[in-house]
Length: 75
Image 1 (tube, helix red, strand yellow):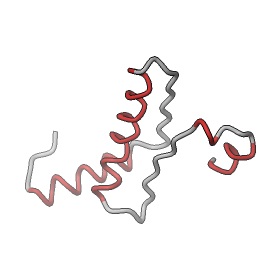
Image 2 (cartoon, rainbow, N blue to C red):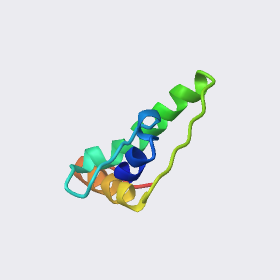
Image 3 (spheres, helix red, strand yellow):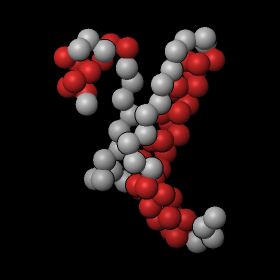
Image 4 (cartoon, rainbow, N blue to C red):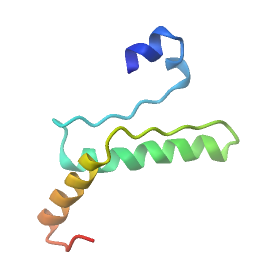
């Protein structure tokens, strides 16, 4: 995806937040919120913002792992 954005000249106007399967559970969990926060920043400034999530099931698994480690009940 990043290569396609670069080839078409769109990467200069793009922020890519990615957490792969090799990243820690905390990084996978927080990456979705980080991307959303960045989008909200530009939206609040009156600029255009588009957030695209590829797969939130990985974030749910990461949340479960963190909850189990902290011994908190899942919701």
